Length: 430
Image (cartoon, rainbow, N blue to C red):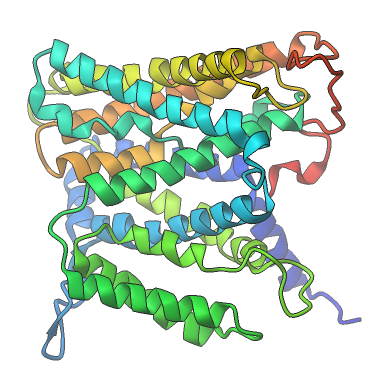
């Protein structure tokens, strides 16, 4: 057998560490915290200059490609496409061979995800209208998002001793939430469409899908096809990160050609360290740098109606949406919660679902651009996500300390619970 070199061993340990859900959440928060400090320090102009630095070509020969983008835009449109590709392969795996394969079993978290998006949106609309700021209505989708990495990372740290079924429920809810958020972005936050560029994108994605299913797909074929698909999607007017999701959907989720694992699992394993350790923290660094010391000061920003609307939507709306929808459908339909999960477990799940962060920040940029609502929206997202994480952490520890009955889901049959969060050292890795 080939010997593992010390360098390879260190690299593998680094990959495992970066891929852990708790690590991803910590890097995300750390990057956002550094950005906030820098953006409000005496050196804030250097942060703004760095964010506005333009990199990339406007033309390639006679062809206009419009890739002369700021670093902040590259982070939101470029690096975030890696994250959405990972989301795409995760969704494909879940739909074909995972928790979303059987709609009957996944029915409750899937419907809870819909309620967990609809209620925050309604609360947001109600608050901005009540506070007489109709100009902020375009941001209705901001509090509908859930950050998978951050939410599951908090659960991995504070949910030890709780059934793994709670993690599966949260993951299913967050995955469906992400899928619906992608649909919302594609439909409601797409500008005028360049149809030839969009057609070119679909051709590249089809070629990518054909090659990724071949016996021996080559990275030097897949990577250029993915880059061209991304560039054409960017030119089409549809948000460029959608290309990452569509590319992820083409990866086969069933093992082929005698392989031990499906390619969705292998590609997710390969790219998760780049997504968690690079793409998401860098995006958070450029997206979270809101200055509170310029202009009219923090009071003016925090006093905007959009702040109250987003905070209420994420912290209150998610809990009400998830709990209310679940209580309703388990009462009026044959659907029941999975084994090991009781209604009380949905309080921390609903709070963790209120951690919007990555996708909420993206939607805020798509909603408001550089308008007067932008800083208020970002501050609300950061503050509400941290508050939801704290409340979720406390409720998880409260839930873990309480005795559990034999039939938590009240289906008349004793629950079959074998695995608990934190039982295995590698529980926090995918």
